Image (cartoon, rainbow, N blue to C red; front, side):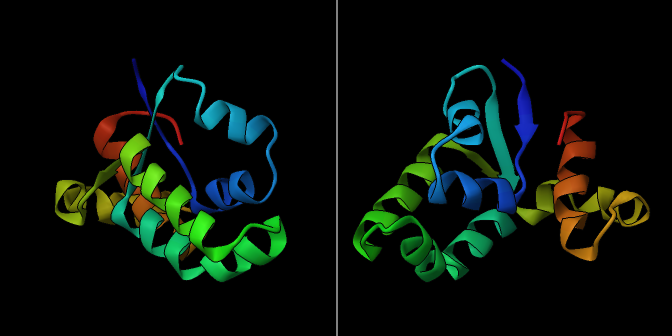
Length: 109
């Protein structure tokens, strides 16, 4: 099974509304991966997720723990040698770590 790097915004969207993104992330057709920044971003927005989804904050926290179980999260040291290359490719500075991880793993983003 191959990896696919998942952007924070896609994960946030999957939390807020079940749909195609949610279905794909948990389809078992690929292994969703992300840099540790992915978890940081999601945790930073858990109040917003709760508000927009109508979920209780406790349910959001439980869902976050499932993300940590379902997704393979990589520490920055694992892809840091690709950061310089990713800076040139990423459309936005917030995307650099996601691009670096995709370059390191040779997978889609």
